[in-house]
Image 1 (cartoon, rainbow, N blue to C red):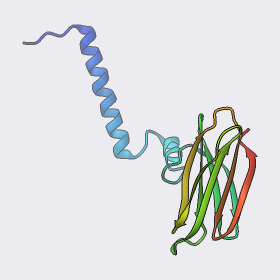
Image 2 (image 1 turned 90 degrees about the horizontal axis):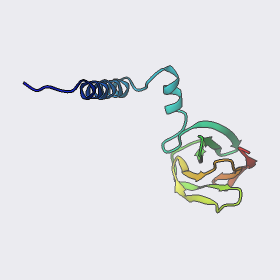
Image 3 (image 1 turned 90 degrees about the vertical axis):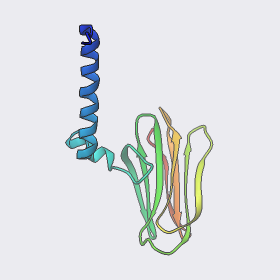
Length: 137
């Protein structure tokens, strides 16, 4: 017979309960009603809330923000054919991060550390594009 100290048993039970709760959340897809919206807020690679959206003739530029990071993607209005797309994200006082190339659906995501900093975002699809100016200040 194995005897556990009471404190050790409580710790093991707490870990088992936490693991069971995490498994249940994974099966259900979210920890609660608000968590589902937070998890699906952005396209693959961007977490956080949608902070700014700029529409233009051939697509849309989306900027997401969480506590420490800003993330941006350019999404084509009519996905399908490969065409030139770009997204650039620059924190104030820092270097710009870009994703350019020929894509079918979106350019990005690009992420920068933006705790207490403004960011400037530009995006384009097939030569037509939009920009935000300095946002998230």
